[in-house]
Length: 103
Image 1 (cartoon, rainbow, N blue to C red):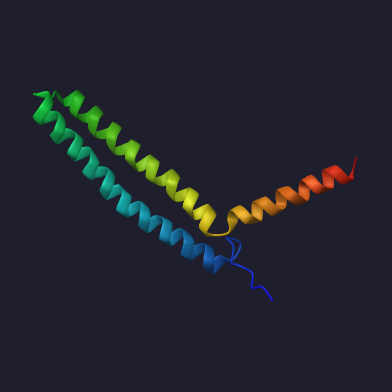
Image 2: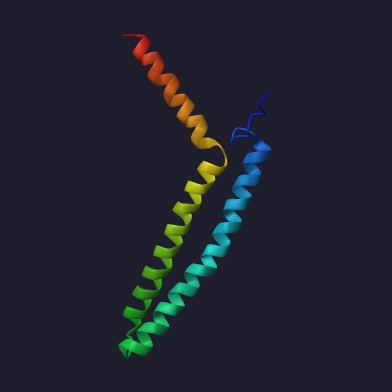
C-alpha cells in the first residue's frame, strides 16, 4: 500500500512549504546584498573612482539579479519538492487522455 505524499492542497503542509521558501528568501537576500557589496568593492579596487550613478546601478543590478535567480530557483525547488509537479503532470495526462478518447 502506498502512502500519498502531501501536496499544496493540504493547508498545513502548504504553510510549512511557504515558510521554508520565505526563510530561504531571507538568506538569499543577505547573499544578494553581499554580492552587491562585493561587486562594488571589486569595481572600486580595479575600476578606480565610482560615480554615484555607477555605484547605484551596479548595486541594484547585481543585487536584484542574484535575488531574482534565487527566487526563481527556489520556486522550482518548491514546486518539485512539494509534489505540485506530479499533481500537474497527472492533470495533464488526464486531460490528454480525455481529448484522445473524444476523437
